[in-house]
Length: 485
Image (cartoon, rainbow, N blue to C red; front, side):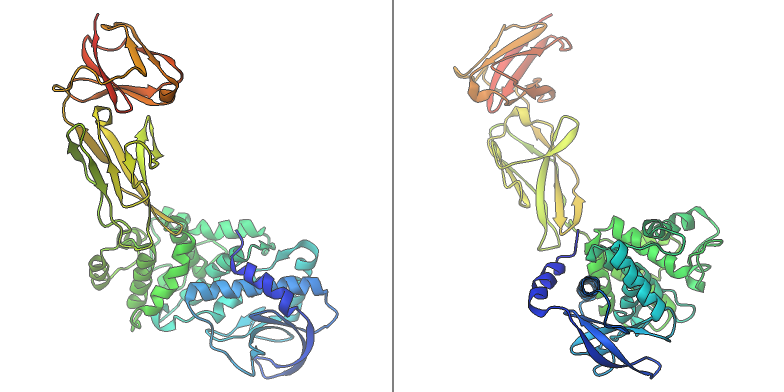
């Protein structure tokens, strides 16, 4: 789904408009150039030619605006503004140049990206002819938004600075909703899958660990992808298994709040701690299973945080027939949303505020005027925080035995016969009870059979019942049954 900031950008398009205007620019290497500016709200594209297709350039700068805003959302800040250099007219520049530090080059933590002439034009051509976007500009934007040298950077053979840009390149392109262009011999999807699949390859090789991969700046042996891609693969796993975009939008912010790392171990610890905080789950065991080093200090600190989206689980309850009960859950997050569910047949289904239930979307599920048909009912709660969900423990409701129940409280709306019954029971009801659930309970309160009334005449099979006394419950109505041979 396209990142929502795009909507704001589109609205601004009608006001700002994108034009090409002459712009003096000094390259990273100090060379003066006269380029043409295509201005968005956050990004200024600087091209050698002023004859490029306006629609293509407008689309390009729009998507870069969206990616810029996404990076800002995830980090909670913007790059340092190199005013008068790579921050012109209140916009961060992406310039077409003839020489720079690589195919593309971006300042760390500061505005400014340069793309070599042929890479700039290749990206332009693919947008114009295929509506596909090369990854290079989105990757270099990750360099501009790197603020974590003192927090996450390894002292030697660091793969994290570039690994961050590798991973966030994919995330920002997804946020912009663009289709990636081929990368080397891969389609863009193949490229992305190849990065994601590095973690399974790492785990399948028992000789590999953090020390001989990330810790020494090495990737998977015999892979064309390196340590930076392997780090991105770990990030993909955390994204895919711990709340998706919610994890990405918080992990770097948490990292920025941690103490500066004085050595590589502390940098490793900081990433594990920030990842756990973003997932709201203690991930110590996960990282240890990945053979990452986790210090005792980090283990103790994470244990002290008591991370969990659920900090009070629902518990089993035993109640008297005709009484009320409240099943409670609590979350550590004030923005949590709750949805209670009831086991119906073989699956859990959402509960609505109807019948005996109220508070189905709160942390307190209230059951009113409980009867024996509710005995052994199983309840759980789905806790959602943004795109993150947790499922609670299951709570079982026990209703005390039926020995003191009168024979019936059925009224003229429901009839059941014959009594005593043997092979089947005919239930005749008025329209008001059609589609109501029924349960057959034995004297100990155990639910023997259940289902729904499908019409005004329903046959319930009793073939597998042992002779004895049972109770038929329909809604809050019950009838004492005698089942014979």
